[in-house]
Structures are given as structure tokens and as C-alpha cells.
Length: 307
Ligand code: GLU
Image (spheres, helix red, strand yellow):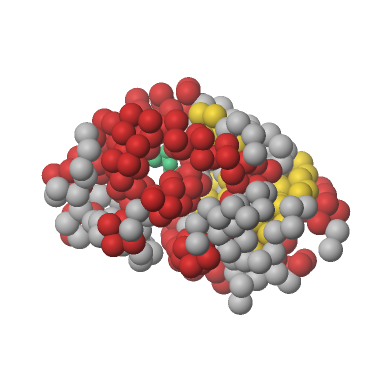
């Protein structure tokens, strides 16, 4: 299949719609001032072929997509029992930053892709790496991307300055004895992971292990996670990766996806490719409006789906 041509066609069709509908995330100034008029798309096949179109090479704030990579990092280094003792694996059916469910479930987050779950994962990584945790995350991302990946420090600082609800979630978990480390240290890590700055092409490459049964995206013979772990991450993406739209995404697109409020979405076609899209204007569910349209078009045109 001529993927470059297909991505060019999708970009050509959607770029003129960019920013017409939906709304860019506005909870911090650094995201509010991003133009809604961007659209980028990129992919990397299991064999290493890459293609990108539109703004596919422009960096943006990956936000919640980072939850995928911190979970992967924790899975690499922890026993299953230790990791899952404090985090569930069920869709939440509640907003990604909801406190209500956390209270009724005694501080155990429903899954690793809602904020509380990602904060619990961050707590584990702070435990594993101590003061080096942010550096270890950057090293891991850069190792997968094959080039240096960095934080947008302005975004990280704004996340911290306005992260009242995340402070509430973390303090709440701490009060239930479900967070081992200092709330400020854990949240400093969490705010930085949200502030990772990457392009769609870098994301498609970095997530490449998810379509390669856990094998490193470009280093032959190196394993990022086991095949079983890669399957499990994909299963969580399908059921919990797109806020409250996971059912609709499975229905219309049929691929494991993880999205972020920066307007990015990563999708996996197991054994074939990883695809990433970016368009900052979000729909009512908090997912990129054109990003979802692009994924649906891609699935339609290629017939690629896990079902
Ligand atoms: N920084 C955002 C928060 O923690 C991330 C939200 C997201 O992308 O879902 O609220």
C-alpha cells in the first residue's frame, strides 16, 4: 500500500477543515494559544517505513498520551502484582479527572489512563528512579524515538500552577495510603510527562513497539516489553484510551488508541503499523475532532482494524 499517498490524501481532505469546529484546550495559556488550524498525520510500519503529511513533523504537547509511555516504563521494571495492586483496568465512565469515583473506590484509580491512575503510576516511577525519574523518562522516550525528546517547560510550569484538581486527586490517594511518595514530587513528574513535546511522526515511531509485539521500534533484537505486555497495553488503550469515547472509537475505528488534550492521538494496528494524528481542536469528549475523523478515514480506506 502507498501509505505516503494515502496520508497526503487524508491531510489534503482534512486540513482545510482544521479549526472550524471544536475548541482548543484552554485550561493553560500555553495550550490556549495553539492555533486550531493545524492538522498532522504520520505512521511507521512494523518494517520501519515512515510517512507523514500536513503538520506531521511539528512538535506539540502530548499530554495524556504520555500515560502510555509511563505505564510501559513501569511495566518494564515492576512485577504485575506490585503494579496492579493499586490500579484497576476498567473503563471509568467518568471524566478523566473525576474525584467522585476515587472516593467510592477508596483511592484505587479505575485504570492507568485517567489522571488518578497516571499519578499512581508516577508514584511507582518516582519510587523506582528517585530524583532521576524525569531524566529516565526523557532517556526512555529518546531511546525509542531515536532522537532527543524534551519537555516544554512552560507547559510543565503552567500545569503545576493550575493543577488544583490533580493536587486534589493526589492528596486524596495519599489520604487513603495509596501513594508512597511526596505529593509534590509525584506531581512534578506527572506535570512534566504531560509536557513532553513531540511530533506525530516521533509519536508513531516511539509507540512502534506496540505493533511489533513489544520489540523496539527500530533496534532489531531489542525488546521494550514482552509480547504479552504489549497486548495488554493495547487492550487498555482500546477500553480506556480515549476518555469517555472508547466505546464509540472501538465501534467506528476499531483500533487501540490513546489521546491527549493537546489534540494528539496514537493508534495501533497490531503487526502492521502505528499511526499518530494531531489537530488541536477537541470535540465534546476531549478527543481531537479531526484526529478522530482522520483515523476513521484511514481505517475505512485501508480496511485495517482489529476486528
Ligand atoms: N495535563 C492534563 C491534566 O492532567 C492532561 C489531560 C489530558 O490530556 O487528558 O489535567
